[in-house]
Amino acid sequence: MVGWYDPLQLIDTGVQVAVSELIGSRSDYRVIEGLSPAQAVFDYATEPEIWIDYVADLGDGWDSTYAIASTLAAEQLELRARAAGPVATARGRILIMGGDEVYPTADRDAYQERTVGPYACALEESSPPHPELFAIPGNHDWYDGLVSFSRLFCQGRWFGGWQTRQRRSYFALRLPHRWWIWGVDIQLESDVDQPQVEYFRAVAQSMQPGDRVILVTAEPHWVYGNIYDSKYQKSLAFLEENIINGAGASLQVALAGDLHHYRRHESVDDPSKQLITSGGGGAFLHPTYGPSVSQITMGKKMPVTYQLKAAYPTERTCKRLLLRNLLFPFINPQFGLFTGLMYLVLAWLLQPSIERELSDLLPGANSGMRLDAFLRAILESPSGVLWIVVIIAGFIFFTDTHSRIYKFAAGGLHALSHLAGVLATAIIASLIVGPGKPLNELSSLQLIGRAIAIFLGGYLIGSFLMGMYLCISLRVFRRHSNEAFSSLRIPDYKNFLRLHIGRDGGLTIYPVGIEQVPRVWTAAVNPTLDKPQLVPGGNQQITVHLIESPIRV
Image 1 (cartoon, rainbow, N blue to C red):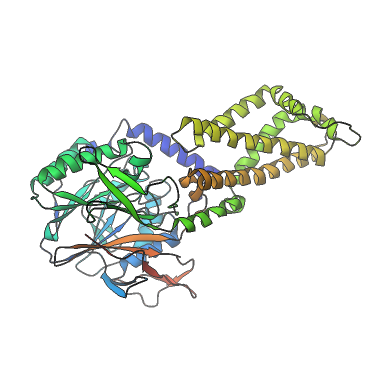
Image 2 (image 1 turned 135 degrees about the horizontal axis):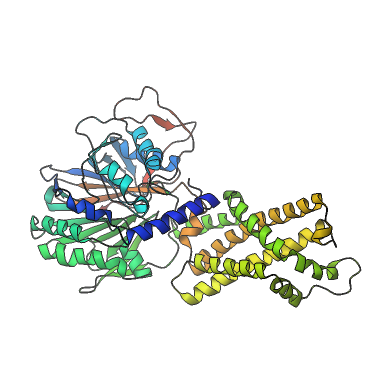
């Protein structure tokens, strides 16, 4: 799994995000797509029934991505529900990838290693009729301006045993019994561009009153719009209210990833309308515990209320997993290199001033260290003050909230806890190595020893404080769900959706879960067409289950 808290990864991701935000707001690859020949509707309406698989947020760790890929590749899959008998399902005639097809950032090598590799290993070749693949990009796919995504998914290439067909980063599929799938590209700014709007307007002209639409987007706008800002809902509300409804059709199901768990909301007034988040294709687990989304409202002209009906894993499980952040230094060992260096630089700048106040702690002293002595030690070092201001600003910026009061309060307290750690580390190092001696009287060996002591203290204390902050922030204040679980790099609790449009015209959605993915793989014995090249090794196996009872729409 990606080490999101590795210092080099943090720097690389930060640069990629900054560059993509800068370019994305001034250069939109979809404008170039709009100049290419028009993309037709992909028609599957003549088939009497059809199976469709949906997966999102893949291409992080091999174990998690391959476990899902090999399950999707199986020609037949038997699903077991806790309160019902087994259900036989078939591999999707169509595979929909719902965004963020690679982590941490998009480029040719990352796609090949983290995405294409696992899927080609799970299904190197397929027998006719070949399953077909459609994909929409998420924010991670946009980090290189959509260049690698377009090369992989929009040029008619083979993706393992799946055939790609689309020519743009969005698409429309006509399905049997007057069902449709619309895959929408919302770029980096939750925006649907004008050429894309015109494309779906043209699609809507071929629809009839009573047609039903499954909308696929890279972000659960119904969640983000209720937690953060209504901007997440505006563009997609326009599609629904002005284009879909304008054609006399109805939006029945919305699917999205971006949040790496399973959550389903159902309309209070119409149980056939579903909003489903399913981002369990291989990325680290996101908790279902966080900002409350037990009830959300969609639409302005005709508001619709949705209730949370199911979540996987449970909030109780997520709270238990969250405690692993107390082992942050061991789960993210490279992060300590950053905090150790930060503590060392700041402590070394403050060391001369601190040492003048340490005489009270030496043997024979009659008084203790005073708080004003610490403050004076800090203020006497201009470079130290600059570093402290930068650190405090950094932690305030890091704080995950749209409330300025909370941002400054929580970020400030987090920064102060690290500054206290710096002072404590510097004092302990001074008392252990060359006590009572200023820096200019220490031998070379003592200087090295004191620097090592400060660095090791910063390595452990800084990492531990970060883990504790994330744990408290999410458990008590329901903040930092992304940061608190990306640090854990949990490959388990994966999920995808299997959809079936039956001969009767009804849609059934099967939410498929894998609670624990194998960690060891071995070569399959005599692998054949339509079979995976690797299978779980040892006593491990891939155990799939229905997260909840099938949803009938």
